[in-house]
Picture 1 (cartoon, helix red, strand yellow):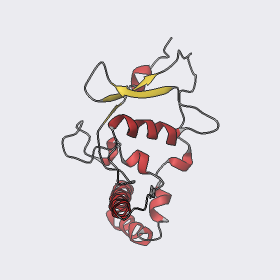
Picture 2 (tube, rainbow, N blue to C red; picture 1 turned 135 degrees about the horizontal axis):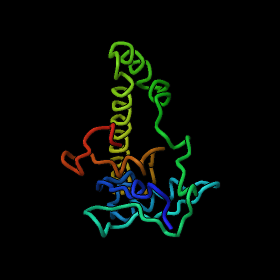
Picture 3 (cartoon, rainbow, N blue to C red; picture 1 turned 90 degrees about the vertical axis):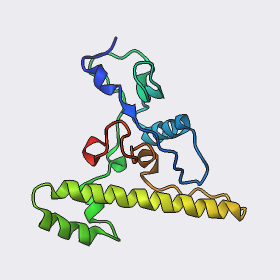
Length: 168
């Protein structure tokens, strides 16, 4: 039996084929890696991410029956991108903090968008570096802390109508 509001768990995800390892990944592999990333010692996700039978794209599908108020999955705070991550960032933190002071209302959102974009660009750079190393015969994974999450975001315009960080 599904709990009230279960429809909100049926999320559709955008597709992104970038890989920090430099190797192409299938869409299903990226979503499996996201669930592995979310997996903690206290909570195993009770969902799989599969091609949706209802709408285009992928959706989070419950694997087992659940009862009202049962925890389906948990995103540990250590995996959340927070404002503290942005303002304590060794490269851009001071600039982000200054920007928050100048931007006024909405400054936090601007800083979070900037930080997420920075992390995405670093992921792209790691992917390029990994590819170059692979061409030299060195097989190395240069994944960053948030890569499994960043890989599924809709970075291309028009994907799922979710072009703004507020939807992520």
